[in-house]
Length: 479
Image 1 (tube, rainbow, N blue to C red):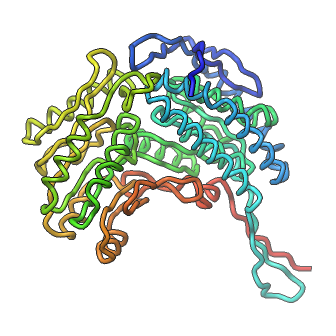
Image 2 (cartoon, rainbow, N blue to C red):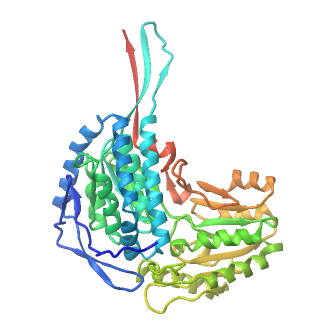
Image 3 (cartoon, rainbow, N blue to C red):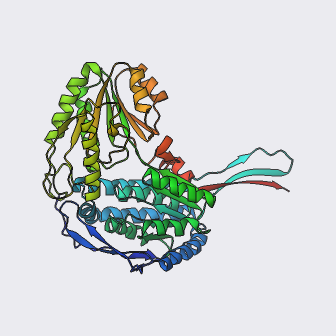
């Protein structure tokens, strides 16, 4: 598939149905992490821009909530069709500004389209219920209504998918939404939003970029916003949850992950390694659901480490627009330094590194397996958010489950076995929001995605994700 030539430009803000240049005094440079090249400069939202967004979303909500569900569905589906038509251009923008290989960027664009389409269809299936009345000549109903204007805060690692989860659910439910996209990846998200916005009334969908603390405070503290949804780090999630609590705002938090993988002795080892290497190093490991802590039965541990290490060393790194590239750079020099520091500290404590190769220039971290990891090594407790996996053996399944749960995160987990007993034990006892057994599919549009413990609360996708944007009202009518 040929790659189009894209003239990269940072987008303006989408405010009140119009694309407007941000009026903040501060501007932000956007770089290609594979080359360090400065792509463009992003104009940020000022306080006045944010107030305009709030006023507009309030007015737009009053209109959008009254649009019939079948029409909301049709408008979103037309936007999705346009999004699919522009996949190549949007994927190229994403690769330039975020670094992931173009094939992964195309897949992300397709997943974003699937998410919004699923939510669009679900708009026609928001049901209430009738409760048997206690009195003669009366009726008791339970009704569902959109919660109100939404503030959505989305990160840079999967900017299309993570924004689409929020946009699709809010708009399908009848809410208006103000999205703060990631400043590191502005053009791809703006291109997706533009495809949808062309089918929407002005102000129903708005997009801003800005100083993160200024944007989150202005939106969450405003009485206009009634629902907050955030994907990002645990420290920021704690801060936003506290702010939302002060104003009694509902909030969905999808935070960090440090996914455990339990590999039993009866697992198909080569298939397990092939799947997990692909999944671990997708997006250079910058995924909250990436398999990271591998607990492997001691009887097959040596074979697993040899196979996983060899596959890790065979990965080809490079710029995302190169068709031969299997793994791109991490997002920034700051991430590069943080991931390398975590590797170095864990090796200093006794972990044995098996390291691949990486280009000398750009924000690359060599794909790394840390074997024989000591229990006190920081890589077992600190989320790497980079191309680092760690492996250690276990003797009993109880030991593996206990070690996997001895971590503050609880987003996704993986199990490889043919044992029904092991499947039942891990399904019941592993503390995660999503579990894949003999596969890697923990996130699909029709199923809930969310975590437990420090990985947040609430769900996106599935009917649970739709419910997050709805209020429930009980009515009791006596004739």
